[in-house]
Amino acid sequence: MIEGVKVKKLKVIPDERGRLMEILRSDDELFQQFGQVYMTTAKPGIVKAWHYHKLQTDNFTCVSGKIKLALYDAREGSQTFKQTQEFIIDLENPLLVQIPANVYHGFKCISVQEAIVINTVTRAYNHQNPDEYRVDADDSDIPYDWRK
Image 1 (cartoon, rainbow, N blue to C red):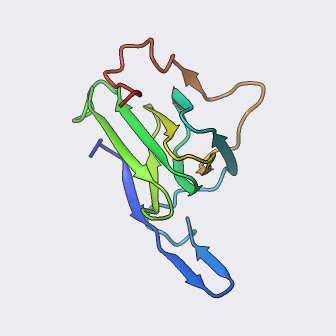
Image 2: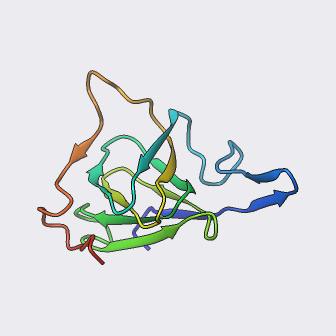
Image 3: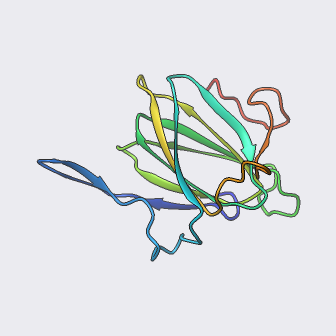
């Protein structure tokens, strides 16, 4: 496990009306603070990577479709420096993955339908000065192959 990454196994509760899944609660061990919640999607086969934040922590889950979430630790001084990690997330394997600041991350839709990801972050997005730093998904020093 990359240093500082935390995983919470989520529980989907079905009944005759549909399903319910708690994602993140203020009394969870993982909860730090509330910044905002947003939804992002990816169409089948599409990769959204790589980026990291210097200030915020992300809390990713997939609520429709299926994703491969990949992380890369570029933090010098971290015990897991230069290590990668991946998670497969969907409603069959519902996870909340907490990604600390300065850890690169991205995801690929690996389902036949569009994947819907919910991210609960610790800081609101600053449109004038975004806390977002990007590198190309395939043209970088990150030792990860999105084609696999």
